[in-house]
Structures are given as structure tokens and as C-alpha cells.
Length: 66
Image (cartoon, rainbow, N blue to C red; front, side, top):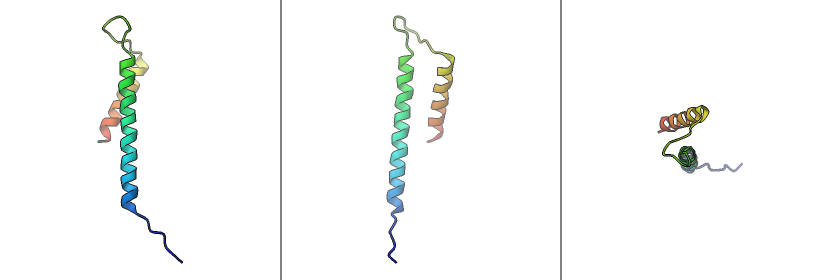
């Protein structure tokens, strides 16, 4: 019975790249969300409470994954 070789290093590299891409996408969403909360006419932000909580939770989770 032939054995199929499994390259664990290739799989690990793929998973690291995938995690890195996911993290970059989450950071992009976080930054876009912050920019979208700016007031159209004034130099201030309009930030609903739920958006603040979600943004902070996302930032914390991204920092914890170092």
C-alpha cells in the first residue's frame, strides 16, 4: 500500500499566510469603520455606542494575536 507524503512545513506556512491575510483584512475593516464615523461637516466623530464597543473588541483581539 503506497503512502501519501504530507508536507507539514508547507501546511504550516499556508496557515500562517492565511492567518496573516485574515488579520490584515480585519485591520482594514477596523480602520475603514473608524474613518466612516467622522462627521461630514465638523471636525468630530459621530460614534454610536455599539460601534465603539465592537471597534475596541476587534482592536483588542488583533493585539492579543501577536
